Image (tube, rainbow, N blue to C red; front, side, top):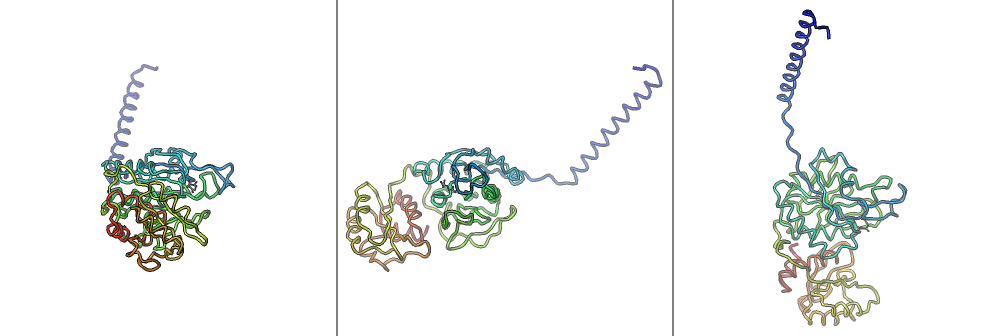
Length: 369
Ligand code: DGL
């Protein structure tokens, strides 16, 4: 095009000008980078998905309680909360896709072994487990008993499906990743983030079956998480994770332990049937302070005489069972479950029985965990 001296000269000048402009831009960028310190690398958080309502889907946004649990895959849970990318480098694994009432001991073992393996990886800083809320408290307690790590492990669920108006899952998940990515959450035992609160996996229970504030502990939350920041108010009082004498890497199977409920007019049929089913311990979910109906006492004594451990818990959600109060536990060689609900007493009994069946040692374990 126009190959004349003036144009050639201009084209040369223009080339020079363009080069100078590029150089100036490169210098400006280098100066800008020099002024803003490099952002520290984000922590790595792994989300292990197991199903539940947090992965649930309803027919319409108005369905906050009628829906199918365990439908949405983990990658969709992650893409639904893009803000998490500012907290951590997040990746997901789909461990199960089930409603949590259907989880089994084998599922618990598989999940805990995966969590344990991940905590040993240098490029994993925290772990989140998405889970149905029905048995979330049992899984959280099991993990705090058997996973040896001080890296944050957070179990999270939701009371409304992801498709519902004011779904609580996305914020609960954001909070869980925030806590799992936090250095100040290390060494707190397994935690549960629901409804802005950071609960101890040991202490928390689902206390209501419909509201988003369902998860409570009678000893209060460990703290709160608000807009990606943790506010701590107490530490766990019982042994957990690194201080635990139990280690999932040295447990191959969980012994069968079942629960019998106490109530007005109760018959010994359930207890006698359970006693003959091969169980290693029976949790008696008694009334009041773990009371046992007088007609039931001989049946529990027979259970104990057969070598099965008898553990007195209470169906009452608050308080704790006093040893030798409602029953002469020393005389009957029974164990008391302290403040643990029947379902949590069962978790601890299964774990403890992988190590001992001595009732004095078991009672120590129920005081300490
Ligand atoms: N089926 C219940 C479960 O998976 C749904 C409750 C929930 O996840 O919130 O635990």
